Length: 224
Image 1 (cartoon, rainbow, N blue to C red):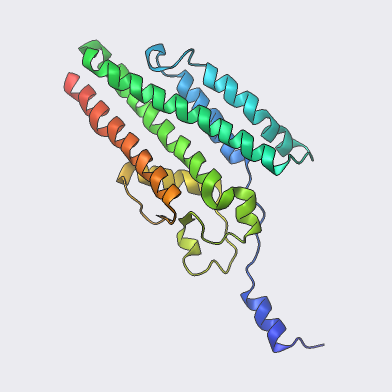
Image 2 (image 1 turned 120 degrees about the vertical axis):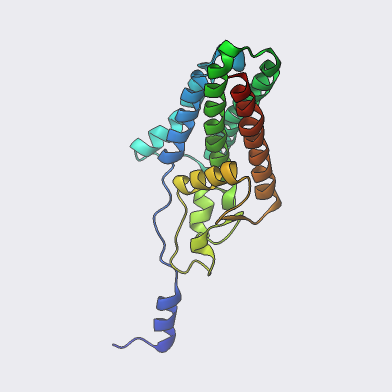
């Protein structure tokens, strides 16, 4: 039986829904942040350097269990855990950058290499922290984005520019790339912030990157 023109047209224009973006990529990013924080010297951490890693592993355990089993966590619980994790990694990053700025005036020549290494670790942490922020706030998180057909929300990726008729959905790596370009170019590149929240987060990330790269790394080079 031949389909009607309306049915055929609807089939052709309906977006192809992909599977929901996996959260395990974001969990790996969180664990990597804890490892980076543990690699910092004790003078640049608030408390023991391993403490954020332990907290992040504990808070990420429900997500790991959900990914390895058929268990489905309540949506509100996942959002609450995600924002608590974001608070932990953000506080750790801001604290370390602050301590690094304070130690600049006391940096001697034999501390230059340590300063450079710390700046690189913090710059990488900055990218991962804001990639996690972008991943979690864009369109209300991965579940809400999937339910909405990955329409443009807080960010507009190139694949969404023409209405996203293919149903393409961003994964965590796409947000890592977004955060990387924001930290290097200090401005949007191919992905644009569409809301005030997204614009504010990108400005904060660019400011932290500017402090780390321009002020801290340049200071270490001058010491050398």
